[in-house]
Length: 279
View (tube, rainbow, N blue to C red):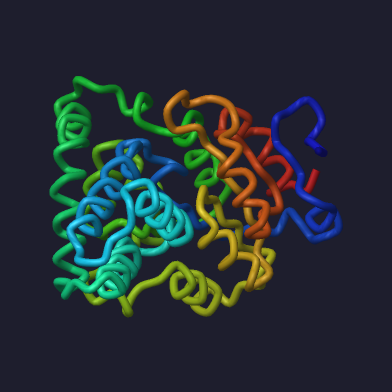
């Protein structure tokens, strides 16, 4: 492993050391797990729901086998819009002799169950009972503020539905940092993707790839940024402890092509010095 001296910021491979830095003008952020921890534990809602539905099919496997199948595709599709996990669920239901509902129906079922888990968190934030910092990746607000002060335009793009992202970003007090815009999943899912947002950023602002940095804890934004020559910062956040590295995330982010891996943003000053000043 190689780290920036005196930090927990891991440099993956040698590619970033030989690429032009200090040219960043735009930054794209994922939301859940990268900035927000409001939805921490969402997998413990989605996976049991899907196992429950698959266990009702005529030709289902044992519950442990179903659990392994669901975990595999939920993990694989994490970072994309939630609807893609529901589309896969429909395919799995068909394979086992069931006639599924539309994917949107399962997405609504999931959102209802997830809301039961996180409603108190959102209400607590809005009422001032829960400090925003308690439900954020540590250092995120300072990172956003310092990027803005440096003249970098910030964008937020999430696989969570747009209305929820806007509401939760406002509840955390970070919505106004994203002067480039807040983007999220739509019912017409073909009209949104993180790749589309990145292409729009580069096209509208006539940027080169190295002028964009993407921050995320999922493979999608990392792969999308790397595909256009951008800099990719993988956020291997431990959403429960709010400290240290989540090894599963780290391995997945490295496979996706991350240039740097950070556990959170407590060392944001050194990270920005490296990205913005090239030092």
